[in-house]
Amino acid sequence: MADMDVFAAMGISGFGKPNQKKNLDPARFDKSKRSEAPASLKTAPAPAPAPEASGPAEESEDEEDENNIGPPPPPPQASSNSQEEEPEYDPAEMGDDDADDEFPTTHELILKDHTKVVSALALDPSGARIVSGSHDYDCKLWDFGGMDMRCKPFKSWEPSGSYHIHDIKYSNDGQKFLVISGTNQAKLYDRDGEEQATFIKGDPYIRDMKNTAGHVGELSACAWHPKDPQFFITSSADSTIRIWDVENKRKQKTVIVVKSKERGARTKVLSCAYSPDGGMIGGGDPWIDIALVCLDGALHMWKTSSNFVRPNLSIEGAHIKGTEAGSLVFSVDGRTVLTRGGDDTVKLWDLRAFKRPLCTRENLPTLYPNTNAIFSPDDKYVVTGAGAAVKGGTGRLLFLRKETLEVEKTLEVGATPVKVFWHSKINQIVTGLSNGQICVLYSPHTSLNGAKLLLNKGPPRKVTIEDMSDALAAPAILTPHALPMFRDGDGIVGNKRKREKDRLDPRKSRRPELPVTGPGKGGRVGASATQHVVQNLVRDTTRDEDPREALLRYAQVANEDPQWTAAWKENQPRPVFADVPEEEDDEEN
Image 1 (spheres, one colour):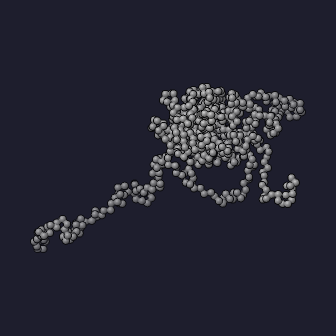
Image 2: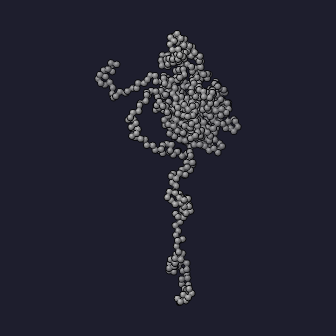
Image 3: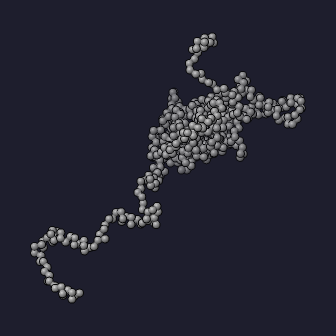
């Protein structure tokens, strides 16, 4: 410190204007704190709050009884709040409660802009942006660093018209993401939500699915290659999984046809996933690369080094036939697979003993087929959502131990959780609910950035007169036809319909002005189409001439240069007419 004082006295302690740091309120996270007590969320110590509430009630009876109106309810609430705040903001006491450190669920942030259930959810690898899809046909992009306290998305669009969004996945580099809707075409977008490609659809009249260039059924899920961001897979209701190259949108790279043992030999592929490695490991022990769950309850596994004729591992009846499995995910080591079925179960499978599941958790109501289950970043817990038991009830977010799938913690949320995502870098849990909300759970101590950025910005700056004057002086000029939504497509989808639509537009087709039919309009006299053609194309005026005068016009030319009677010019007798007196002519008349 002495050296710094010497530098300050010499005037060389620093250069430039010092940065002004914002004085943030240390209790700024209290506004987003969850109303439920953390201790009441655990299943084991459920009866614990009863003795805690009885202690302060007995002490309040010994005090003076000046205000005798409702003394029992207020003291327990005040004491419980004081006891809850101490372990959250005191670092010494927070070390005693390991459960709060493991699960970042003490605070929450609600993102509300969808109107229906959030059926798809993804975070980029850095944890800075969220892309969500819903049954209201919209996709929305959220940016934690650019949002204010209103918590609104910076972009919203409809990828496929009136089709539900089924799945969204970010690539490993975070520069693009896939959108899977109810159509048979996957769409690729860049980081800012600009459409990059629409992959081709197949021919529905071809029976052999290997001979089609794309899917012919409704898409259900997608997955990026864990190592190469140029490849991804899509699953569909046409009983196929197709491996695509990002650079080639006109045809898939490989087709995996899933054969069912049911009649018809086809089944709907509900979910697909890549293993974490996507290839082989040393020692000659192969990892399964591609896995999928089907509507007939089967679970199949393939290796990418195989020819995809038949699965390397397969089990029938993994889930009840006819139920839609919501997710399929590999663990970090790649030897364990977690499935979330539509039969209200979560099952854990070991690829080394694939005959039966390691453990099963039942009685988890599944109200939406997109409900998923994930592993925690430390691979110790399994997180999934359970629907409300009654209509209008609250949903539950369950934290299960990986070894036994026993409930470690239960968290109540406002509606049924459908999609759950636990980001490892920012240590925050993002959940899509059935009421259209996105709930971001975090902890002010163990979480990093993400939802904390909104509260670290401080209060918003008040609008001044200069801001309003600038807004009025420089109005924004919008050119709608320059926006990306009005630009021409990539030339693959909808060209025929687009040409037919443009053909009906007189400006785009440059159609000439049609004749006016009927009485006429706009100062133009009406005429029929035949009259219009005659007036503009047929310019013959012989109808208005005297035929005798027209013939006599060529009499002198015929006498001087006959073309057809030249042989008779020498020997043809000339007619000699008798002279008739004028008197006889008068008498005859």
